[in-house]
Length: 209
Image (cartoon, rainbow, N blue to C red; front, side):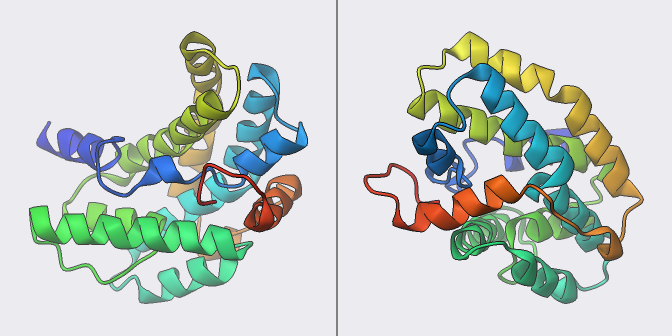
């Protein structure tokens, strides 16, 4: 039970990684009209989780969990970031996660990208990978639903319906990642990647990415 509570604490919106400040390019997609309501938001997030950066994060997290030292996995994560903003997002959130984990649990974590940091911390704390992966992905999707609720006329109930509809995809991606290696690292959510690139010059904007 304590492991489950620790994992939920790490992935809670209250954990100080600043996730609320990052839209992962979603703000650009909303500005472009590609995401304009619950249906298009669900489709966008499904693509991220099953074919894009959500899937990649799960594979990187699993690789970091299995690694004796996560440095190589972290270098791969940085090289795989599709844009400067994606790199900033994973670097700054990961650094904040490592800082908090050192201060609270005295974990010996260097500055790591976010999924690599979570995977390395779960390994040290002996939190099972099958528990870590789906909760990480749910937190990833939940943060983007929160972004949409701040940038769209999307109510709380509709946001929760979107998140609930993603459950099968979150579960399937988490299951896939358990047996993956870095050789399985791919991303084909091109529209989301391009949106993240274009967001660098979006004005005005609310979110850092």
